[in-house]
Length: 99
Image 1: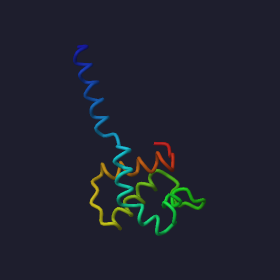
Image 2: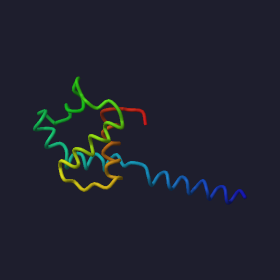
Image 3: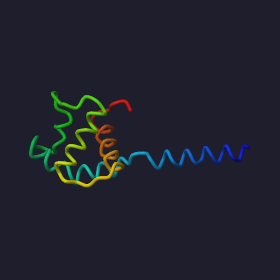
């Protein structure tokens, strides 16, 4: 019984880690696809779009929707896990919404 429980817990751990967002991949996707537009809009390095006083994103759900809108505008074909990575990167770096 103990072996079965340990095996079950190990499987849960593997499933959880496989679903975890990848901060570095999110940063890379963001930098390759998003910064050019943000620089043209905000100047500098483009990060002011996230830190401005009147920013429009006020929740994790709103952030996810905005990432999807931007992805569609770019014509990027990011699968859901890559969208998760970009949302995770932006939230960890700029927004700090509770997950």
